[in-house]
Length: 126
Image 1 (spheres, rainbow, N blue to C red):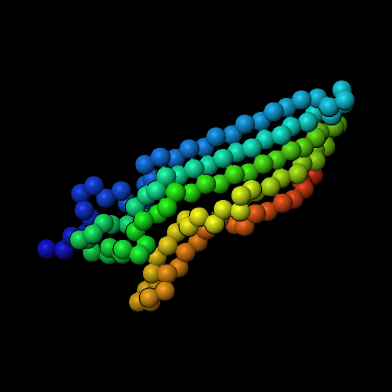
Image 2 (tube, rainbow, N blue to C red):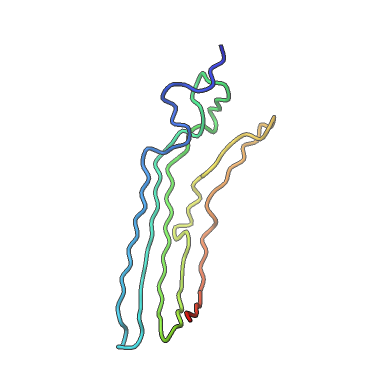
């Protein structure tokens, strides 16, 4: 008989996931509404696919390592305008989100978070 899935295989679901965010707002010089914000995401180690003994088991790609992702943002608002500076992927995390062998290939394809991104954003509220 062909084993497709083993009893107890997690099949891509981390046991723990955590999302935490915080924002601090204040009024600067009695004129500007100002804020700073940070958001953090964590996923624990997980099993990407089926375990040993099942058809399709791949020892090189089955373990998904924990992931960490942090963003930060700070900005000011005045009369319908908002100017904010941001950093996405503050730690420049390169945790592997996906890994697999290509069809019939010994090469492993992986994906990760986008590299650290730093920028400014201007918004008009009307």
